[in-house]
Image 1 (cartoon, rainbow, N blue to C red):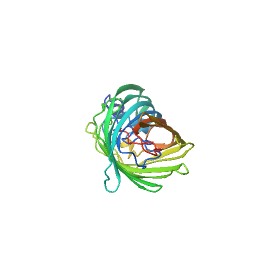
Image 2 (cartoon, rainbow, N blue to C red; image 1 turned 30 degrees about the horizontal axis):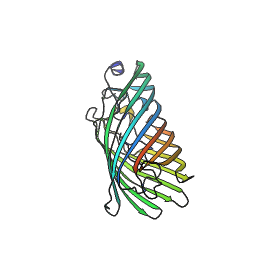
Image 3 (cartoon, rainbow, N blue to C red; image 1 turned 45 degrees about the vertical axis):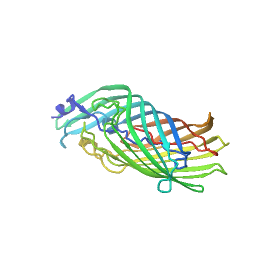
Image 4 (tube, rainbow, N blue to C red; image 1 turned 90 degrees about the vertical axis):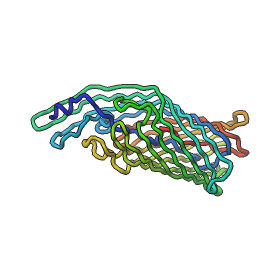
Length: 335
């Protein structure tokens, strides 16, 4: 029985494989600051380099079928992955107030390359029988991802700014349940939350925080359903001049309900990750428009059931010019 289970050639990748619809770190500073009405385009380059071991690696290559409790499985696996993605997020800011606030609506999509490698050994023990499967799996993919429509409402009261948002995942990206790396997520999701920004233009000090929840729908290919995720992104900055600001940013990501449909050896498979790092931004005119360029990077720690490492965001935004425009625009990024 152990030999049949371990050496069975067909595999079923865990639905999210340690990734998620929500990219931790996509929100940072100035998230709730009101914008100038009109069209805006944000282009985001995202790079990540991650690694995992044990069950977090096994989630990307787990055996089909239910392994009986009488079989003891030892996972000695290592996963490494890399992603280089470019996301485009056009949006429109309405001049007419909605619920006393400013409405921003748009759509985000992405294209890029992902690569992954798994190596190691799975050992199953059933009484006197010991069976081992070892080797290396690797793959890469250059393709397109899913679409993420989003809407934000922004309110301002002096130095206090408030934001509510809603977004979701439309699973139209390149996805194959038997392929190691994927850019599409393979299932739908909805995400909602709110944020706050303290921004004192006189002193140049700013602090922002955004909290939200992600609800995942089942993956129709694998019948796997990821649990509900809670995430909190934050950023703090100070303007050194009217155009240049520096600061720090971070995030906390915690799954709060169990996955379902996964192999029993993974248990509830709740994922967790924390990240923190520096950020810098610069605002400049682009003809009769305003340009904003921002760079921030995160080093991850405290991860569980999720590949972790480091990631970086380079964002360029072009938007209508305001009389006293100082804050760069931030938008939700599609999975």
